Length: 426
Ligand code: PMP
Image (tube, rainbow, N blue to C red; front, side):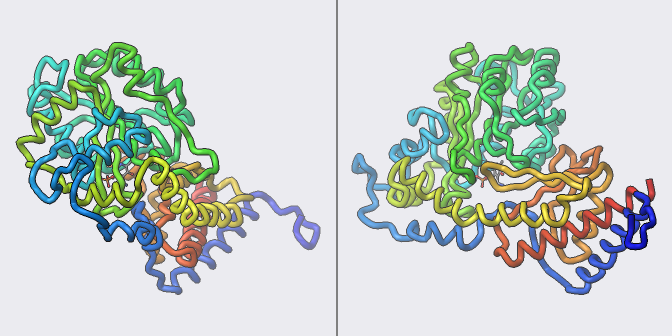
């Protein structure tokens, strides 16, 4: 009942909500904001944690005495590979440190496979009539960008709380030899924070594939990026693949982009001995060696696996309050409504906001018109097309807390406006 004892219908209540949202939205637009939540970038505070990296103490030599100022060392600095071996679950001898971007390595892996047979392949991917990759959705738009660039058909597969829907994955890889790969972000996935269960990892490692040269692109970008007190552990896919007779199935990728400097870190490639040999046979043509001085700086700065853990705890201390803030605001603004749900990830860089079907694009457009830039709706799906139009990726790390508060409150206003309107017009 309302104040005068009349029964308020659901419709009237919804109309009142929409009118409140309209007022709030007008006020929001009037503020003339200019805020950016588009990409998962570390904040300046986080980058400052790694300032020590700029001071190279001691001589520019490797543990074995190699002068790192010179050419050579294509595999990367052994002592750095040893530090990251545990986190990436790759034996140091099968882990390479190269370049500053893991995306670049994923891109190159596709190009190398196009141009020369991967171990186990009957022919080069470029000579296949069709190449398809499975894309768990929601997922990472830059993976899709690589596929689009090289004409790889993308087949979406639903994500579950345990990782990709494995019944669907097993069915697709078993029946279609054109399916040559799957993109996986196994820990704190981008954007929904999913951690693959042991069973999912085991099934990925063990499944039968129609393509003899099927590859799992294991993009472990958030391997050490914990937000919860208990770090998530995932099963060892390289070991499981080898145990199941598919030693060459997995390409592991990682980087220090969100550990040290996003633009001046180190990237890693790990795989079976045969794949590593294949990889090096191509990279040897491409470079005389990586920036080993930067790699040495990383060794001196991080020291060992324990040092890496300590450093990541400092990141968590900076960004966990931002994730908590987003959750608090969304709960206050939308918690009582059935207009949205959102993830509370235990790690990684993103929160996924799910709005009613058919609303995401309009919410993002309304936010943009109010000066709040978000990742385009649909970007979490192949070809930028999410048929249900309901997923919005929030990247809370970069803005300072005050900006974040304004942006998320504004975003919630846009959700209330668009979702109530949609319901009233349904
Ligand atoms: N993979 C995933 C899943 C990511 O989220 C990102 C960064 N947004 C990258 C790779 C990019 O990594 P890098 O900086 O090493 O190229």
